[in-house]
Image (cartoon, rainbow, N blue to C red; front, side):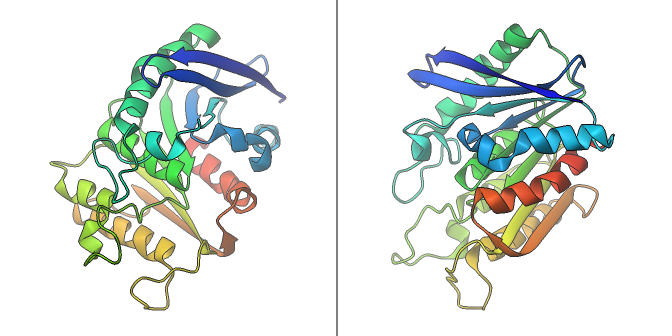
Amino acid sequence: MLVTENTLTLSSALLEREVTCTILLPENTEPQSLLLLNDGQELENLNLKTLLEYQYERNGITPLLVVAVHAGPERVQEYGVAGELDFKKRGSKASAYTQFILEELLPAISKETGFYNFKTKVYAGFSLGGLSALDITWHHADVFQKAGIFSGSLWWRSRDLADDYTDNDRIMHRVIRDTAGKPDVKLWLQTGTKDEAADRNQNGIIDSIDDTVDLIKELETKGYTRPHDIQYLEMIGGEHNSATWAKALPKFLCWAFAS
């Protein structure tokens, strides 16, 4: 099954900029699911179109509409955790970005494609875009049922390391811990053993892995279980780049959209 590629450009009043999206759609087939991707400008490096065609050929996944949202010049302000600035005051437009996704982008997708109803809506992202996808899914489980977090920036913190930092200063961990109830979402998380070299607590495990594992522990404390609610892929030799994430994508796609 071939995949067609088109471009959607919309003028966002909320973000005060033009937003470019790449749309991938299987030919002559109505999609059952929607996948939103942050950092859509990386689509070619992720080789996603070819990956989708391969999965369709082997009936590995159900047909889906992919909308890859290209990041803008203020990426570090638009991504992050809504309403929670990090210690460098980044993430100041994360609330506006969330509103953009819900109030401007989703209606524009339906208008552009003619598809209004999806069996499943999934949101995924890479690095800081992964944190953004997690935050939006977590707070809007009525819209998105699953999230994919590739090498997520789960270190995102309210206090600098040099300013009496503790792990309680990690923003997303605290958000999950303080959330009343248990949002009805399923999460897929990935790290690579070469994501970075930083090791804050000098325990021999890089921060990317520590922060992801600790997030999973927070989720388990709230009642989420593995593998039913949480899937975690730790890639030996995996790096913080599109080449590694492209290798992880087939496992994510089969988890999120299994036929």
